[in-house]
Length: 451
Image 1 (cartoon, one colour):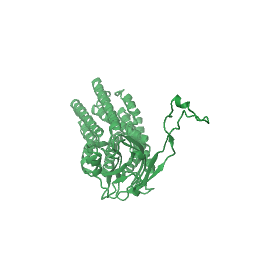
Image 2: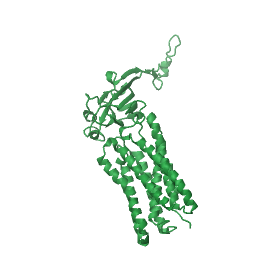
Image 3: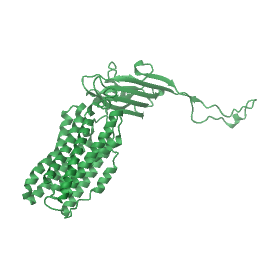
Image 4: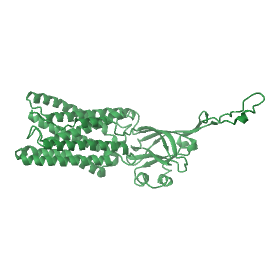
């Protein structure tokens, strides 16, 4: 019997094109800051006590002097009290302790700043200065022309600063780096290069990772192995189901979901392995991995909704009305998911949000998951209403699928208030991947039982 599915492939292709939608914060950062403001945020990092090291190289024209490098930590009276507040530049600086080296004056007059003043080769001022034709007629007796004046030269004085700092605190702590010049009339203008580490050179698992990211790479490597083993089991089960002509469309969707998840985990593993070596990694590879995982989640959601509507359980094809409803819902789901990715790309503020699920985009993804769960329960109830004899399958199926839908959002909401900030991202990362893996494993168990 032919089994038709809703036409979702075009939408998935559109989502796949949007691969470069996520910002990644490497711990080796460089850039050119130009702003009319007199205070600006640059970067953040979660440093270990004693092991945390911050190396900076900053260069700017002395006409913008004196700019200050400000080091805020995460206690409520410092960074949360000044960022995106109405305080003046002086008030934002006043919360810092000069005695604890939280203010670095970037001037050659301070030896601890590591700044030296250099003069670059003179450059001609743009444009030539000329005199009127009448003055040109009055050339000297030697015939030397006096109609053109020599262009003035501009000598630029550049401050170049380089130093290394260590962080000592009672615990792992988030540090936020900012630049200020409260007396500035031209704003801020500087080039910077930061290297932020949490271990000695060669410490593969810690050197380039922020303290809240320590366990992400081990988590990814562990699940890469798990999914490789699962794919082996899937291949064996596929051969058996094909020989018995039981290779249904729902099983094929499951295989697609597992494949996307496995590729997503592996691509992210590759990016983080490189990141462990150089502090930069492969940002686009990581973004591709995240998008593949999103595709896996969406595909698995489609699978659960199809089963909830009785596809391959009570009927060989969906009714027209059910197909239309499911297609509309999945289209809205994919469009909303992509919109949240775009929102994250455009509005994610690392100075205000420590990781995705503290942002509006993260809360939107959780809300989307709950809406999908409601759709699943609604479909299951109506299927049971018409096919009560399938209760032995649908009651445990509904329970397990409900856990898959709600476990992630519930855990994230709890984590945002109960888990310390300096380990939160790693823990949430591990739990979400565990939930995804257990969902796939449970469906594979059902397939193996049929084998």
